[in-house]
Amino acid sequence: MNSTFTAPRVDASLDVDQVHVWRGDRHVLKGVSLTLRAGELLHVWGANGTGKTTLLRVVCGLLRPEQGTVAWGGRPIGAQRAEFQATLAYASHEPALKSDLTALENLRFAVGLKRPAADAELQACLDRTGVGRCADLPARVLSAGQRRRVAMARVLGVKAPLWLLDEPFTNLDLAGTGLVSSLLHEHVSGGGLALVVAHQDLDVGLAVRRMELDG
Amino acid sequence: MIGMFSALRLILQRELLLSLRRPDQLLQPLVFFLIVTTLFPLALSPQLSLLRDMAPGVLWVAALLSSLLSLDALFRGDAEDGTLEQLALSGQALSVIVVGKTVAHWLVSGAALVVMSPLVAIALGIPLAAFPTMLASLALGTFTLSWLGAIGAGLTVGLRRGSVLLSLIVLPLAMPLLIFGANATDRAIAGVNPAGAMYFLAALCVFTATLAPFAATAALRITLE
Image 1 (cartoon, each protein chain N blue to C red):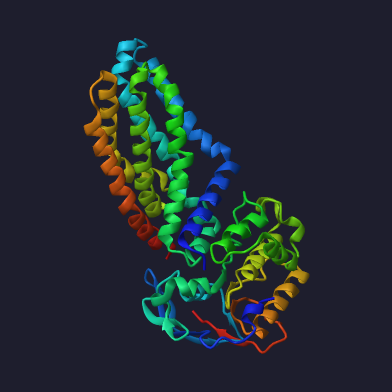
Image 2 (cartoon, rainbow over the protein chains, first blue to last red):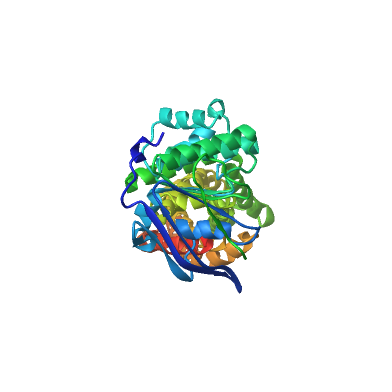
């Protein structure tokens, strides 16, 4: 699938070093460090409110930590914001779809801002996540699980080396869970990097590193 | 990564398509504009000379208020469904996204209002000779207002009920527009050269269009955090 990223890229490395984040007077992230290399999957878990989503937002550069650094390829992401953000695919816990646009149109704009992509290619991504026949339906009529699958199709379409997934299994049926697991398997075994926040155990048929966040 | 202008075109397409899918949001401010301007002759007097005297003021106040109606939705929808985050992470400068969204907003609100204004102008007894000045001044004024509104919308998008605050932020900033816009229209009706006021409007337009993208981007970045 990600043929462009089958070979591990030398500079594909994520280093989070001693990140501290306060929200108001709440100390959400207390010195979190992690490393992620090409071909690795890191599963972040922990109880509700321990800062898993906050960590993802820090990693993708939406939230600037009060202390600590996030580096991509050895350079701080603040110094290469645009380049870094073009190399990541972030799926938040909301599917982030415009309900008035069709599934395909949603992909066309979301993926198109990152890289030029033909409709046929985007349609293939939708087919891969099992929502190909919903391509021309407005996102508002899709079920929660279908929306999640469209969001995964967007992640696929971006063809980014770094995947940041926030609870990717929410609202998915058994087949959908299996699908996301096999997509993760393909991505990581092809040399990609994945940081996944999830409550349940990951079963992707690969060595998965686990990291627990405790509030 | 795609170029800045392709990104801008894509954002414009997205916004215009979205407004097309929600025609009610496009029509409501325009109908509001029509109704408010109709209220004045009913409340005051339908006497043509009186109407013609107050026409510039009525036209401009109604245009400002109806433009404000749609401003609150500029970033709010995208912030609520999570697409704003995706736009911010697209690898494109956030300011490009702000520019695209604001220009699209003006096209569906301000430009549409300019197109509608002759209807109101005829009802208020504005002479045909004053139409070019009126249209040009309204176009400049609404475009400037969209930029001012982008700053306000960026600041208030994180608040649950931001629309009143948005008006309180934007309306004081819009006062120079009202003064020069109404003055230009007034002069055109009286048959006097409106160039002075028009130059001021154009200067305000250039000033806000160059600086507001940065201010709105900064405001939006705070909201995203």
